Image (cartoon, rainbow, N blue to C red; front, side):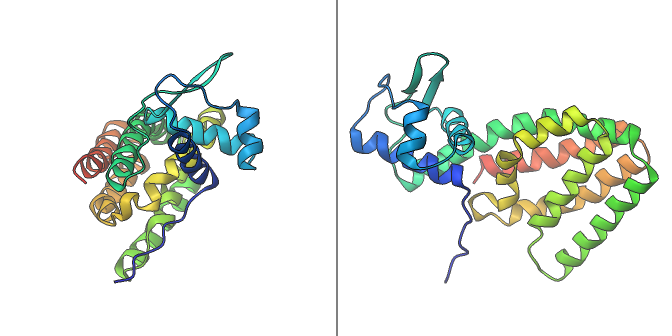
Length: 226
């Protein structure tokens, strides 16, 4: 059976190349990697892509970035390039990001339930209708799922919160790329988009947060048990 090709962002490719570099060079815990400037030249990438890659590698304990001192190998065993370790690293990374997403998006849900305008309620309603159509036709729902959550940040009407979200949006998108190719993640959280929307539209903060946390709990459980 042909497997769906997984899209990769530049920072994902960069992180893989850094892991390969550590392996090929036989670096051990505490060994120093080339500087950020040297890495951008070696890899032929921009600083932003390198920065995202280093954030990911730090999250899964492969490297440690020490301000003013450099980039160091953090765990001499974790970089072993095997399928099993890659999955475990991905799980660890997603769980770290999920902690951040709970806090950030949870606040967005709270503010959206308080501040959402009738215009934005209608936009979210239309988004859900589009979601329903995709779901009923058996189409990929990842893009419309991501769009729904973006509407929550828009409805929160806090430019700074939205800016913080945008700064890590590439990392959060990992949830909407079907982590590990697990389509069940979208199937299992699908019903809670409607109940979450109902809470926001009715300006019921407690109900909206309860439904949001149910959704996050399902995502966490799915990742942990994969």
